[in-house]
Length: 168
Image (cartoon, rainbow, N blue to C red):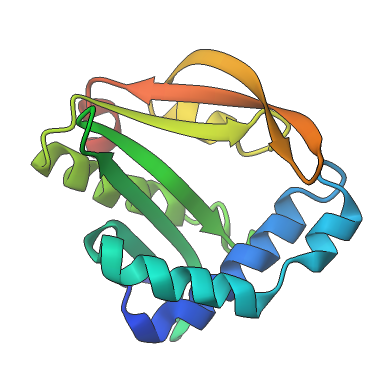
């Protein structure tokens, strides 16, 4: 397994992981017709737009040259807070430490950028939601968010100390 920063040529690989992991993770949570409507092409366009803007904050995981996961994060310039935008790993590659290594790289970025706090939003029904708590994330609120013309509970985690992640 190899981690590296994303490049423009990775947009389609990221898009495939994005769509496939949504379909795997949110089956039975998000309506099937919405999941079926997700397309590689539209996600590729999204990532072609995002990669140049947040290049240093998009990390991909490759196994045998295939993108099997990605993570992204950003700093909010108004609040100096870090935000984990996504961590997606194809189901067949979960449980191998890929998520841990991507978290560590994101938090090294947040520390370098002097983020005062890092936060993430995750659907509460996502069976991987506890992943963030296992890295010392403190659950600080829940609220309903709208996805696919319906409302779903999201849990918010935050970190103010990076040691729990960087030393894990």
